Length: 355
Image (cartoon, rainbow, N blue to C red; front, side, top):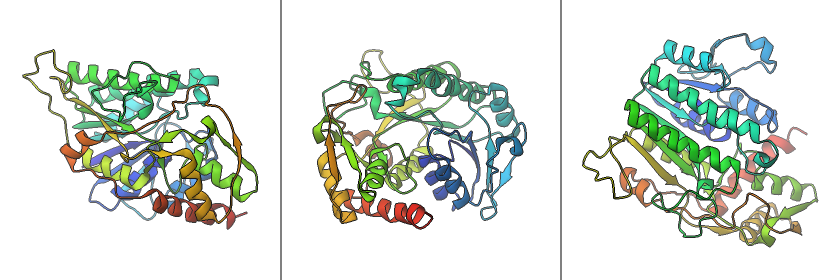
C-alpha cells in the first residue's frame, strides 16, 4: 500500500506519519512549509521523522524531488504547494497512491478574518487540485480534514453529523464546509470514496503555536498575562492528538460504499460513496477549567486578561462521535490532565532546553 499524507510538516500530519511508519506501507509526505507559525516547529517535526529538508526552498530544487527519511526507509517527503495543480497531478501520476489523507490547509479562525484570500487559495483551490488528481489517477480512499467549525452558530449540542452546518461564523468554517460539499460531488460524479473528519480542538506535543494551550503555556512560563475570551466561559471538546490519529488510522480502512436504496428524503448516508464524521473527545471542557489544569501542571498561576468573545468564535463545541464509534470502534482514551502533562513535558524540552 502507498499512502500520501498532505500537510505532513503540520501538527496532525506529523503524528499520523509517526504512527504509520511502524507499518509495512510506503508513505509519501507533502508540505509547502509556510511561515504561518514558527517554522522551527515544522522543521523539528520533519527532523523527528528523519527528514533532512533544506530550509531554503530554492535549495530543495524544482518539481517534486523526493527526500527519503534517514531512519524510516518507507517514508519520503516532497515539497509542493497544493495550489500547484500541475505539480500535484504529476505527483499522483508518478506515485499512483492507494490512499490519500489530505491534512494540508490554512488553519486558524481569527487569521481568516484578516487574510481571507489565503483560505480560498489553500483550502478551496488546493483541495480542488487534490480531487482532480484523484479523479485523473484514481485512489481507493480519500480522507480529508474538515472541522467542528462547520457547525458555526448552531446551538443544538452535542453536534451531530445530521445537524445543521449552514450558519458558519468564519471564512475558515466556510472553506471546510465547502470541502465537504466538493468531496461529495466528486464521489457522486466519479465514484471516488471520500471521508471527511470534523476535528474538534486538537492539542498535544508538537502542537500549533497559534492555539490556546501553546499560547497559554508560553505566557504563563514567561510571567505574562493570557487572553481569556468570553470571560473563560467558552467550552471546547479538547481532543488529544493520539486519539485523533487513532481515529484517522481506523477510518482509512473504512471505505464508504454508498447506500443505493436511499429514498432521497432521509438524512444521512446517500448513494454516493462519501461520509463525514465527527472526531472528538465527546466531553466539552470549560476554558477556565482547562486553564486551571494547565496551572496545576506548571505549578504557576496564570495572570488572566478577561475579554469578550471574539468575532468568528463560537461559545461551545461538543462532538457526538457515535457514528464514528459504531463504524470503527473509535473511543478517545486520553484525559485532559494526561494530555496537558504530555504537552508541557514536550514544550519544556523543545523550547526551554534550547533557549
